[in-house]
Image (cartoon, rainbow, N blue to C red; front, side, top):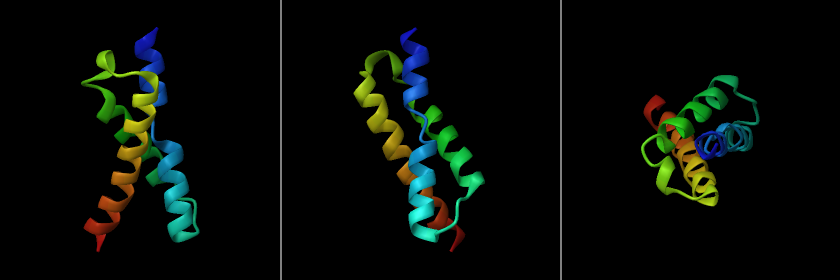
Amino acid sequence: MFILVATTLATASLTSFFITYMKDKVADVCMTLNGGLAGLVSITTGYANVSPVGTVVIGFNSGRLLVFSVTFLEK
């Protein structure tokens, strides 16, 4: 059960959505879905050793990192 909770909390879809919306003033569906995927990938290796609060922090940081790295690489 904890595996399900950890992976669900780590999705960074909302983080990437809000950062993209505040930055570009446009809701980008592709960036939102990629943020969710980035959060799931970032929590995959350590879900057994991380608390639920830690999974939220990892998901937030991965979503933030995704948005800024994609915009940097596109420029």
